[in-house]
Length: 209
Image: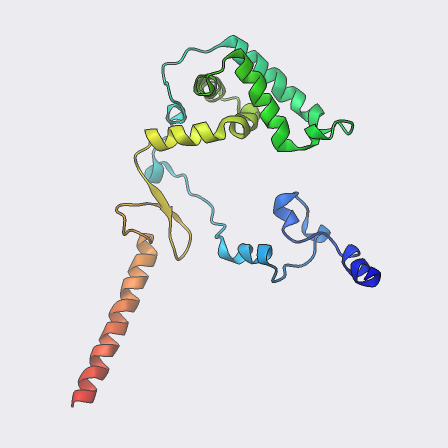
């Protein structure tokens, strides 16, 4: 048993740590056929194209519940203070709780809600401040604390629905419930179907003769 365990402890980290822990390719084992590594081949890693002609101009108000909300300096100042402190929380070896990233952001969220218990209001204030002022370096904390509310707001405000093409993984606008492919893959699929139907028709008539 000891010999078997040592055979595994001498190995490098699993391949998926490239994504889970930001490890480099030389720090991990080669991609194998384990369950979690097979996800690499199942999930497309397609770059999303945000050309204005395809998706329109970004409007931060779509991330909000109340687009007319007034900025609240108490919430903003507390948010900026906590956002700076979070790095010290992560690095504190004496407090094991704060080494849990999810726990840290949960605590940040709770401290912000002490100022105002309405999570939708707090989210709106922070979205308006961070996006209107273009303070991109502070947005991670916003999404990790209130991302669920922002997504909820987007779903309500943006009526257009997008899907990933089932063949190539490209993000496209879904025109109806049966729409599953991008234009290019749909044309290829239709061409293949037409050719297959033509072959079936040919062999069917040949047998009848």
